[in-house]
Image (cartoon, rainbow, N blue to C red):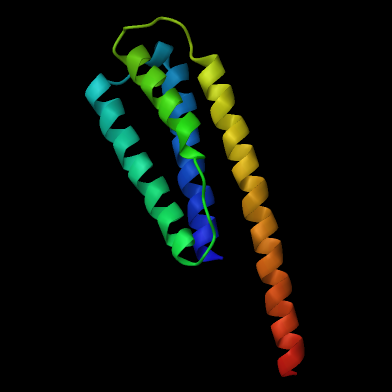
Length: 123
């Protein structure tokens, strides 16, 4: 359960950062290096959380792909290379995160049922 919560938190943090950064003065509130460093930290946290869950046998696919695309666009926005808000990429992030959250909740429900069954057998 803790590993599933860690995945949800890591992807939520990445999602929020991208939306806030893109929305703050067109992404120009932070230097491109600051954005790149923070995205690297968020990517690392998401991948570490996913890897930990995979060691428990729960496969995490390529949910990070839309996050990578949106991160690249937000970085370009912060660098002044583009002026348009990356709405398409950020919409893809929200959809990927929503789908991942659904999978996490389903997995948690399955684990809760398994724990309940085990408790029932022990009693």
